[in-house]
Every structure is written in structure tokens, then in C-alpha cells.
Length: 236
Image 1 (cartoon, one colour):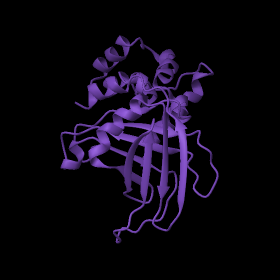
Image 2: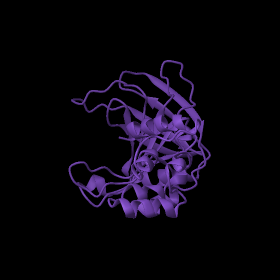
Image 3: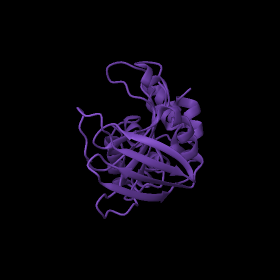
């Protein structure tokens, strides 16, 4: 859902430069623009979640958005272009549970990494997932993962798994392969990893796959202003 939301938001952004707002009713136009949020725009998630249109519009108005001419301002606060270029964290408010449930998530797409070598890492994603008050015990605790942009060797019938050694400002963390693309940070390190990434300046990791391939990269981390407020609001 995150990728779809980001692309939807990026699509809305195409109109903001021309001054032509999308032909949608308010608050539907605001919802579309605010569906995927940067950490700096976390307050918008409260408005998206409101069912009653009058209450929803009042929520947007309290943030300074009142009519279709403000759609581009909503998009700017949501940070679409910065999210897509890896300059901002993207956040998604959690659902309350049910068949379409999803946890609140903060995602950083490493869009500026080199796209070369035997293991290209551009568009690798760092994901921090909030605890939820529904589902299994795995859903009810902080989890973190690093998702590679392409498949690596993986056999679900084998106990062999790839590994990832991670450092954030020199602090070591470890992750184990969960799927063809995803490496889950160790459960007992997830909260510390979250705090390190939010406060950190640089991240590096080295991947070792089950078929003997290795790859490494490093990247600066963007300012995470707003993530703590988001965690307090949606992850309690």
C-alpha cells in the first residue's frame, strides 16, 4: 500500500505547478493529496482517518487548508517529491484492525544509492512498524526491516538464510533474511534500531546471501523531525 500511496501522491503533484487543482470534491481531494505522508506532515493523517465529511473538512481547516486551491499546499506538506527522492521519511497511519488491517509504518526509500555492481541497492527501503493492538504477538511489538529493491537467493524450505550486518553511526545491528527481498532486524534490537535511525546521521550494511553473493553500501540519513511525534500519536 505504501508504494501505491506514494505514487498516487506523486501523480497529484503534477498539477500543483500549473495551478490547476484536481477536479475532486473536498475533502476527497485533500485525502488523495495527503494519503502518503512525510513525517513533517503527520498531523494530516488524523484528517484522512475521519469518516464524517464536515468533521474531516474542519480538521483540514484547522491546519490551514480550506478549498481546492490549497491542494498543492497539502501536497507540499505531505512531501511527495522529497519522499520519492529519499529526502524524507514517509508515514502511514495504522488501521484499527479487521480484514484490511495494517500497522502504522515509517518508511525511508534510499533513492540516491548507486545503481551499479553485482548487488544494486538503489531504492532499498528501511521500514519501522508500530506495535498494533490486534493480531498475533508479532504485530504487538516494534519491528524493523530493510527491504532490498530486487530478489536475492531464498528457499523457504531450507533453514539457510541470508544475513545483513548493519551499522548506524557505528552502532551495530543484525538482520536475517525473511523473504526474497526482506531482512528483518533482530526482535531484541528493533527498538534500539528505531531510535538509532531516527537520531542517526549515516547507515551502512553488508549483505551475505545463501548462494555466496555479498554486497555493501552506505548512505547518509535525512532529518527525521516529526517521527517522534508520529510515534507518540499513532504507536502508543
